[in-house]
Length: 421
Image 1 (tube, helix red, strand yellow):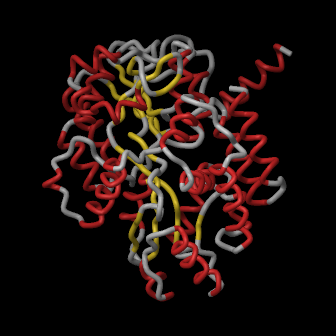
Image 2: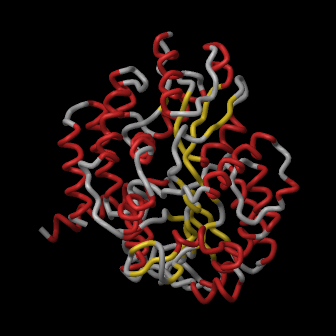
């Protein structure tokens, strides 16, 4: 059995581009390694490129080595890599109990609490955005600071304005109006909603529908373990039944069951589907790549709560040798000039000079985030509560879409995985 485990581990490392056993630390005294998974054409990718340029300019004796990784690549291997000598000096990582929380509880992340106070990061983040950076025994929401976010994000509805105009439909204000819009497209032979069952997008659609029935008590019970969660209650039952209904009505294509996030984005960009429900991380890319139709965004109609949070975290491995360099880099990413660049590129900055952001589309994006914040409506993400829950949600939401399982069977599986954490 041990040999089998070793073989599987080696295969994973090789296939994902990591070496389990290095001859020595990846770092030397004048080296600095950065890993992140942002698109170079996206807002964060552009901002981090500028931060790396400034880092090299202000640290002439240091060699910066940047490696672009995939989201899934880091998600699947972070625990293994951070426990080896292949860990970089700093990397981008997802927040939540199942990810940063789990690694912090395993002693793999540097506690940044005192550094954040010394360098003023606390003042920039505030308590709300820092919530997803703090963990106590692996549970998010309080405790020491194990990461730093430097942008906001939320899930919204992207829509093709030209296709809406052609169908004679307007931006909906309620869920019923939203379904009426999708009925109109479906009746015209157009599948309205681009999504992807094989990765995170479809579970975010499911979560939006669940949240349409949720209140603050339910949300805190589900995300922060402050009470029991009934998976056969109205929230999850409504969301699951709606997913099945939306498939039956042709709002989503049967092909979407096996599609990935990139397929979804390309379908929206290509005008195949007029609507896409996903995160603000697509915004900057769409600003650059969509040139043949007009598009806009609105928040999911009728909901108080929406998937969203402070953005992904910069984390510093506990075993990193040059931690001061990582702290210098975080300083630069939080500078107002880099934050303003992030905003003008289509991101949601947390320390920008807002008078320098002129694009009305970007102002619309930031206004949506502020509207959610004003209602205390950030609901985090559905896979955060439990390590490994992302894969469970992908599989069970696919089962809803394909109807390979009944709603009752899917909810039982979600409940079992949640309570066996």
